[in-house]
Image 1: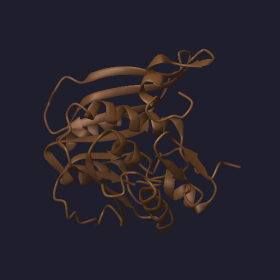
Image 2 (image 1 turned 90 degrees about the horizontal axis):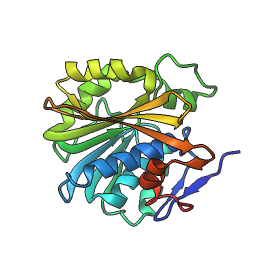
Image 3 (image 1 turned 90 degrees about the vertical axis):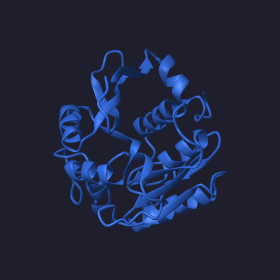
Length: 240
């Protein structure tokens, strides 16, 4: 049975009411985006977390960046879980859980300087059992093209859109981004180890053409975490 909470150095993520639990790739993603945005972000800039779930990504960003984040979640249980996690965190004043469908979401903050999403779907992958997990992992309600359309609509002119996807969707994501007028400025392929092929890809897009910085991140090196993983997660993981 999965733990009902995940303890980080500066915050706790309770997860007993959400279909998707804290996972390593999401933690890598949150840490990577925070590290890339740290030198670039403006204090108290507006941020948006699409499909926040437990609120993990918003909490990781809030620890490192002084953003005002709207965390949108359509599932009622997950929304209430994220709201509770925000309330118990040191950044309650900066994090706002919003119970809404992102397709009909109306922002009161205007355009967002940073939009982040670990999309609640894996298109064409084997469906999990249970409606909650299915909705959390599949494009039953929102496809990737529509996600790009929404992100482009809500993104500030000089803003950034960060996205985590299964590795096999890398080319498709770049094509859909181009259709939406976005271009990758950072790309990272995530590998379980030096021996494994990439299983996730992380993007940060902008509304201007640029040569993307491309890197590989390996979670493990033999029996130990890799140096790049330790560097990213040390601010968050208790045991690092």
